[in-house]
Length: 491
Ligand SMILES: Cc1cc2nc3c(=O)[nH]c(=O)nc-3n(C[C@H](O)[C@H](O)[C@H](O)COP(=O)(O)OP(=O)(O)OC[C@H]3O[C@@H](n4cnc5c(N)ncnc54)[C@H](O)[C@@H]3O)c2cc1C
Image (cartoon, rainbow, N blue to C red; front, side):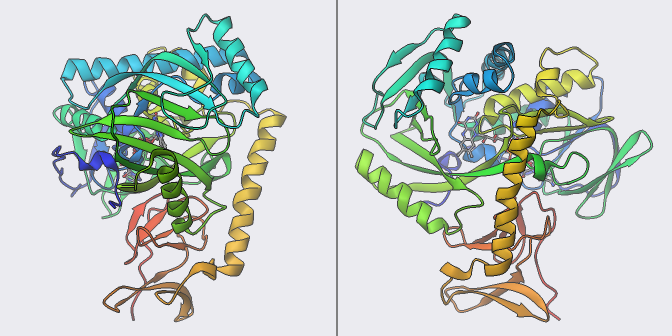
């Protein structure tokens, strides 16, 4: 079983770019080379601005390369949710934005001949329990109100529990990693990209911003676009208090036939199914398990997912991996200005292929002083009603209770002989003993907001149950929002 995303199996060459090795100035600094960052760079690359993109790792290796590669406007029961949270016109505007994003991705792929396995599919939203009939009806009413074509069905094109389903057109699937590498190749001809360059802070200096990277170099710019999935700073905007992190698990194996459709379920588990044809046919199956704050031993998730895969599709998993996304309190992403010329692009609610693309269009239009009809829709500083404040409050109770529980128990309940939590020189440490008997000692405290880290037995990493930072067994940061390692001083 491979412990990596099925997209990374591709032979595509992702050439490493150099590290930043001096102080620089530019007009626009983009932080992060994923769907949001590269899409913004693509839209700005022909402007009169000097644009620089920095990437902590290698572009394309973040959350986007682990997602299910769907490009669809059929996103669970989003339109009934937005109609309830706001009104049906706002829901319709969101629908338009998703169609525009799909059109943009298609345009980019065609114009630049990016080979990324783009295939047109039918899209299904289905209920496996049948207990959300009212919300389903509201979704149907929304489709009817705006003349959106759909079919109401009682089964899926694959054997899987389904009480009822909505099927629509105009959706696609692709290999998101191949797409991002394609974008990077185009963009890097016009703008400077520095990889292996981690931003650790963004500070204001009069009407400019000074962003510092891990080697101490500084980038001075008029605009900063923070497109690093989970923004690394807490102030301004207080992202950790306005979003929730949801972790998802994905499995894949070869499948007997080609499945040219994509499915997403309603309900807590958020089942995601799609086919992928490379040389062989694959079936990709993903599901939300628990919020990141409520399940800590990832081996349970593996057992559950592989059990379900075997039960429904009769196969053993060939791939198992996981990723997470930031969920917002109202179902709309946060895309836009949070300070004078400081932008964020996050909170995609599991739909970052479209929302990352639209964010590139919106942010580049704002920077270029152009109007864009979605600026208000995604405005991160949009007004808060009592209902939304209630949602934010619930999110924070969840994270807060995990924080406290995890301080008390250190989540030791499932640790075996190979993993220990101990105080070393007065510091709480996590100790992992590898198969050669070598002990790897790291701090057990996440530098981001001081949560205790838990050991991930599948990937052999230390993961933060509060905001999803991840570190390898030697303490190197592999995933933010933390920007610091957890190595300990050995003296
Ligand atoms: C299981 C699952 C399935 C999904 N499937 C779909 C799908 O089918 N369709 C869809 O539309 N969406 C899907 N999503 C959502 C989608 O994957 C995300 O919303 C999207 O990938 C986020 O894109 P991004 O550019 O913000 O982040 P990323 O792709 O993670 O890019 C951010 C980049 O910033 C870099 N970075 C981070 N910190 C720093 C720093 N301090 N300095 C410099 N660089 C930094 C990272 O290394 C990374 O390369 C799914 C999500 C999950 C959890």
